[in-house]
Length: 105
Image (cartoon, rainbow, N blue to C red; front, side, top):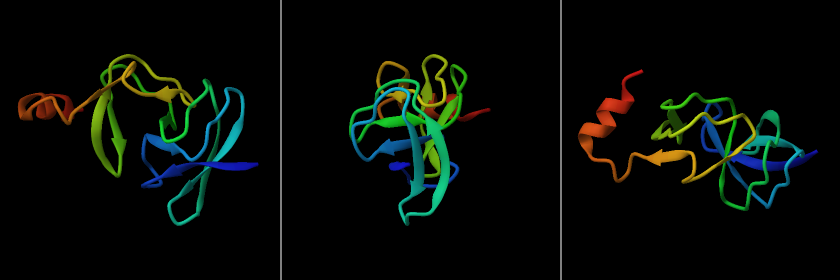
């Protein structure tokens, strides 16, 4: 099985594609130290360096990467799906009030 997804933290909501990945592939997710975390079946193709949902996420759920919130799901995201601007709203450019509002769960 290919080891093709890197996780900054083992319990992050998203991992990073270490290569171009095709829909339907079963890929091993590992930590940056190379420790296996889980296998995931890709729901969609994911290009190199793009994010992959490690679990189903409801709309407006805070998305965790690096062990911290990076944004929120702008619509529901299925496990194994490509996570990018079409379904993730970044907190980086949102402003403090919006960050605090979406951080409440």
